[in-house]
Image (cartoon, rainbow, N blue to C red):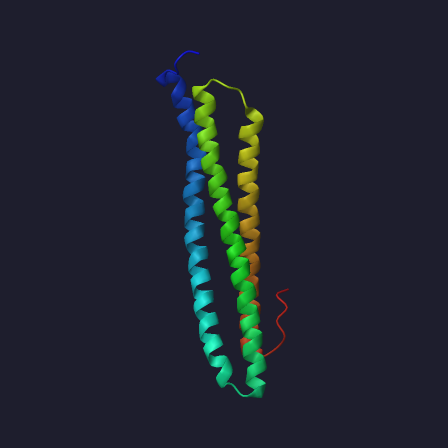
Length: 152
């Protein structure tokens, strides 16, 4: 096996820039999602503190809010997990790109599979995140009008 020259390494570096930028973008999404999770947790704690002090009609409303907040927290957690997996697979892709270049291997299927899994996780994360946003709007409607929240 011959050593890899700098001229041969430059295309690998150029190829690795795409997944690196993807990791950066996912990091910003994770920052947003963790902030939403923190706000949801804070709101849940505040609603839970108010629950014992409420009268019977208000108790049902607060219990409904807690259920929606719990559901939202679980959705955001899933979204964060999928985004984190996306970043993990992008990092693995970068490593595989360099290892295959150094060892002069042709492993197109592994590279394509890692990239596809990375994007599927990212797409899944964004779908769940959008679902959380819709549920947050439904919860707002619940608070304003007192109607049933279904998240549809």
